[in-house]
Amino acid sequence: MTKSLARRVAAASTVLALGGLGTLAVQAPAHAAGFSAAYTCSVPLSGSQTVTITGTLTASPNPSTVGTATHFALHISNLSLSSPLAINSWSATAALNVSGAQTASFSVTGSGGSVPANQPITGDLSGNWTPTAAGTDQIQGGNVTVKASVSLLGTLTIPCTPNSPRPVAETLTVN
Image (cartoon, rainbow, N blue to C red):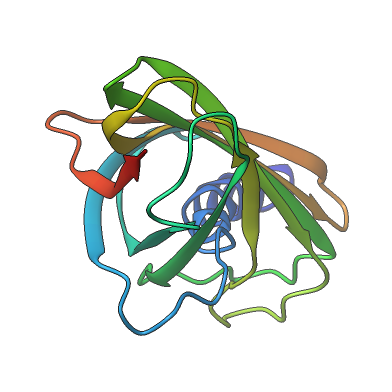
């Protein structure tokens, strides 16, 4: 029985890490450009797992103005994993890295409720950043942390790091 429980915990941890990334979502306008990025996640009890996140990142307004807060919405459109166990609730934080006219980093966050077993996980992440220099900035995905609450297992924390090369998820023009 202990061996069976250990296998379930390992399977749940793996799928929660991978499926939990699917929770990073916000409905984006149809004109948003897409991206696909590889990540390596450290899954409790089962080690490193590689996943691909496909989605869109939308900055609003774009173009923006120096000193004006810009809203960012992240929509995950494809993560081909689902959890074999029901998730009670989840939360996620994703760092976004800025390069170009200036160098910066900021976070988008989101959370959601229950997700039935064997169903894809979707949800919302959003946040704001205020540019301080005029020019063109490229925004790339950075580290992602997913926390999922699962009955019998408690809260699992799954850190994920982006693999290289990291695609540009959004380009922001700042006037």
